Length: 257
Image (cartoon, rainbow, N blue to C red; front, side, top):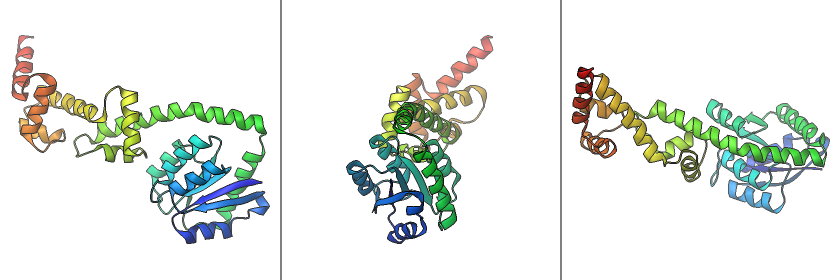
């Protein structure tokens, strides 16, 4: 029998899924329910299910965080997200995480059972060797997923560096916990998130100093700082000169050409 674990902090949702699913007809059995991410992980560690159906928002761990951790324990695990939000960013991240299906609340009997039938065919269609190979492929793809998460984060920073972005806001934009994202970003980029953000802002500030007549105070605001004194301190720390001196030097160099 194919084992299924349901994770949702709303007891009535867990009960509804149990009622709507034609478990026996799909050759499945419910291995249990969990009211939050940590509880689900504990159950997965003790007795790995074949399928995890999880809400996207729960206390302790989000559904996406739960899926990432669960796949470390059981790489061949098939996952289904349920959500009350028709949110493109959530759906996109879910797809990137290899989620099999993304179901919106209120859950419909037909839609749920169509997903279960497809999962039955997917899981039942392959023997042990196929599942082993799939597990190996999923393990190999984790590195590419990490690369992709950092690429998305860098793109987010390039678009939003003028705003008051933080490690937390950027990590949330790519669906990762701030601590995991911080370690991943430094490993991939060779520098920490804070230093990378400063470099992006200072590169933009230098271009504005060279190419425009905007005041230093205005440039300060345009690159995400509210305090001109703090901006000037950071600029001098990274470039070796004050913004006004950098501008004068850049203008002088152009006049010599």
